[in-house]
Amino acid sequence: MHTTGGERFTVEATSLPEATVLVTKGELDHDTAEPLRQALDSVWRDGGRLLVDLSRLDFCDSTGLNLLLSGRLAVREAGGSLELIGLHPPVSRMFQITGADRLFPVHTDLDAALAHPRST
Image 1 (cartoon, one colour):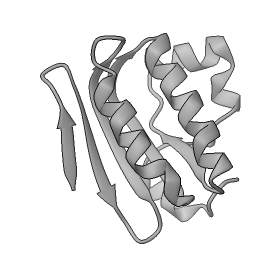
Image 2: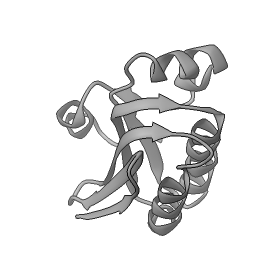
Image 3: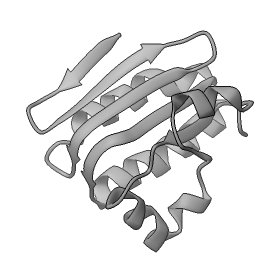
Image 4: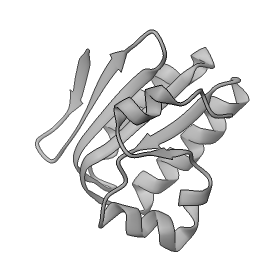
């Protein structure tokens, strides 16, 4: 397990046999996005399953959404998948308004994600 970030936003990365899990916490915006960018850059190349847990995210602006969208493309190009966990208001609202919720497989929690086969 590896945690990066600052006071307002953190990312905790954990490698499981089935997937790599990134747990986000706090406020994801232009000023706090670097830990997520670094975490995505360090894990997307393996072509495996990447689960990004947003259940502890209090806020996400367009910077965070764009990072996840570009991460999704990079992971797919490497033969993997990027799936989301725990979209809760107000973060879910951003995904609904932009239609991004239709681009990602979304699971209620980690157990539900691991119970389903990898999405492509």
